Structure formats: C-alpha cells, structure tokens
Length: 258
Image 1 (cartoon, rainbow, N blue to C red):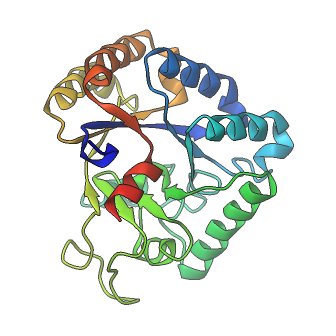
Image 2 (tube, one colour):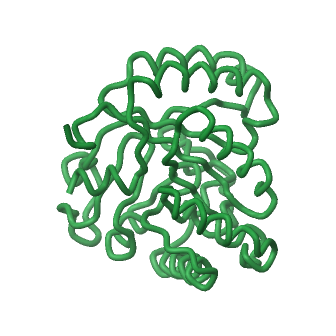
C-alpha cells in the first residue's frame, strides 16, 4: 500500500527560532521517542529582524540534520507578529486580529517583500523551505495570491493547498468556490491563550484525535513543553495515533495530492 493511502499523522512544530531553539530540539527528540520520525518544522526567519542563523548559527546545522532525517521545513512568516495591530476586532475574522497575524494589515507589495525577505534569510542560512504556514493561520487575499509562485504548498487551519492547482484570478474574492483545499484536514492542537482554553483544549484534542479522518494534523508549540498537562495530553495522543498512523510531513502530503 502506498504512503498516500495509509492513515497518516502529520505533526507540525511551530515557532522554531533562536529563543525557542532548545525547547524545539527537546520536543523533536521527544517525538522521535514516540515513533514520529517525520515532522514539519515551521521556521521564523527573523523574529527580531535579525536573521535566525546570525543569532544562533547552530539552528541551521540542526535543521539540516533534521531534513537529512526526513523532516520538512516551512517558512513561518517573517517576524511572526503584527507590526500594525488593528484597534478594532472583526468577530467574523478573529484570526486577523491576533498579535501573531503578521500579514493582516499589509498590502500586496508589503506582503511580497516580507515573503521574499524571509525566503532570502532562510536560503542564506542553507535552509530550503518547501512550503509556508502563516502565523496564526491568518491569510489575506494578497498573501494567498502570492504563495503559489513561491512555495510548493501552503497550509491553512482547515487544509493544505498544493501549488499548481486552480487558483482564482488576481483580485477575485477568495471563497470556497474559487479555491478548496487540496487536502481537507483541520489542524488540531492545545490552546493556552486563556484559562478556559487551557482547561478545555486537552479534552477537545483527545476527542479530535479519535474522530480524525485519513489525515490527523497535530500542531505543537514550544510553550507546550512548559505545561505538564499539555505534555501528558500530547503523550496520550501520540500513544493512540502513532501505532495506527504513518508519520508524514506536509511535503509528503502535498506530493501525494498532486
């Protein structure tokens, strides 16, 4: 049976950058101990406007070793925070008002500059990202229109989009009718933004694990390592999912869907 026909688990480790490097490395080793031999690493190119390899040269070496071991690299924005926060909140689009929603208030030219600057920073460090994941999964029409020409895939909160599939014309509204995910699978993880989310998200994550379809997308963050309840929940998820699912990267999923 081919990899694409197996039930799969795609683990994405978010927010890889100098300040989180030790925690990310520990989580990656922990995943390996649980049988997850393929992970998608979401790398922030310049969290404080300094290239990540200038701050921590060993990050590039570690990422290269991970790729040789089967992992995939995705560009995770440029700075990973919104430099022009909105003073108003739109209930229908809450993600665009997250502090991490880097592209929410950028126009098309500013979006292109941020994307290309991030790619240059990573390539100068010897890091070749196959795909892109927007911070907070906050996408704008301008961002979506630019991604197909720069990456092999990009991932939203509800699915993965492989480049080369039909896209709407420039300026056309981005709706389900103009572009559907190449692979439909929600990203699930643990919340920490409030006491209520921290209390209820472990139960929701366990339920989502049991109800997941062919592909289970599991999001991990460096902050999970500091929360014993999060790590216990993630341990439960992996013990239930890995024996039944083949670990894959987002690169694998995009290739299988093409």
